[in-house]
Length: 112
Length: 116
Image (cartoon, rainbow over all chains, first blue to last red):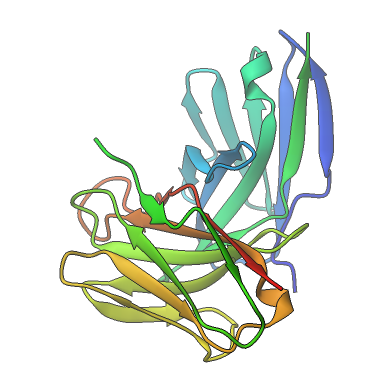
C-alpha cells in the first residue's frame, strides 16, 4: 500500500522557469511533510518541510504548498537552475511516530 | 559541522553471509534511522533507535537487526543474506523532542550492499 505517491517519475523544465513537483498521500494521520533532493551516489538532502497545520512554507527559491482536503502537496522551485537537476522525494510523518514514509521520487531535469 | 557518516561505502557479500553496516549521527543527535532503497524503489523504513533503544521497526524480517551504542552511533546487521537484500542502505539522524525542526532527518551517503 503506497501511502505517499509521486505520480510523475520524471519532469523536464527549462532553466529559469518554475518547476512544480507533486505528491499525493492517503493517510489522514500524516502530520508533517518533507521534501528531499537526492543526487546519484549521495544520501538525500533535506530541502524544506511543512506542518499539517500550515498550507504554505517558503525558503528562498523553494515553496511547499499543502492542500489537506485534497491530500496533496507540491514543491515549487523558482527560478529553476541546472544544479536543481536531481531526484526529489516527498516524505510524510505519521502523528505520534518518527519514521518517514517516502514517495517513489521524481527525477527533475533542468535544461539550459 | 560533520554530517552523518556511514561505513563502508560498498560491501560485497555472498548469499547466506552476514553484513554489518555502521553509522555515526550528527553530533548532538540522539535518534538514528535506517532505510533501504532497493533498485527502482523508494526509501523503505527499516529501524529507528533513540537513546540506545529500538523504538520502531518497519516491515522487514527479524534477520534485519541493529543496535545503538552509548555514543549514539549505530550498527545495522543483516543475517542470512539473500540476493534481494542488495540495495543502498541509508542512515539518518535527527533531534527528537529537542526543539524546532525535530522531525527533519539528515541522511548519510549510504552503504551499497551487493549480495552475490
